[in-house]
Length: 197
Image (cartoon, rainbow, N blue to C red; front, side, top):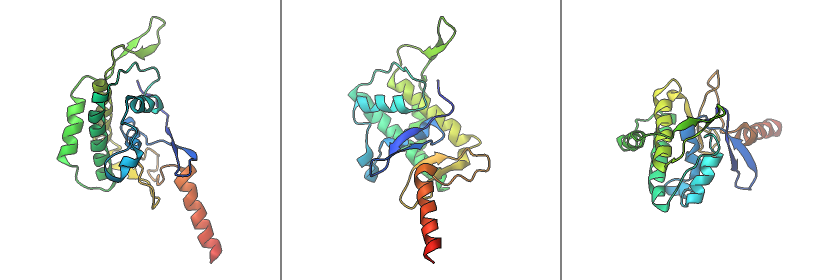
């Protein structure tokens, strides 16, 4: 189960929170860290970190997920492959076969399951696994990268921000990870530049 309109709360280097909506579940996984310079943002090094991401993601609340230390390397591997695919799309480069293989492998398993409650509502089925979570995220990535918005994956236009998102705006001209953060910073820079002349 996924919610339609959500976003993550991220923090600037100064500690100020701002909202970032990457537009897809699979892209919500990317700000959790990664290889190289992204390792300083790593939060998927403990089961609690994965639980926190699940709770903050667009997945419906209440997912009864059992996470062990042994599950985390596979989640990080999927996250890193998704980052490679999203960056390739954003910069119109070829997709790496290794990244595609990781996503396809994760998607091959059964995804998270839902059930109907006695009251007629929706809930997560018991027995959710990390493999099911990974399959759900990987299937979301396949739908994104092969669907109508696959060519609209973008990197934030700020010179010092590398967040990736899918531009679902009607005109297709979204440039910033968040108007609240990078968009406003650019407006301030442009205003200062105009008034300094």
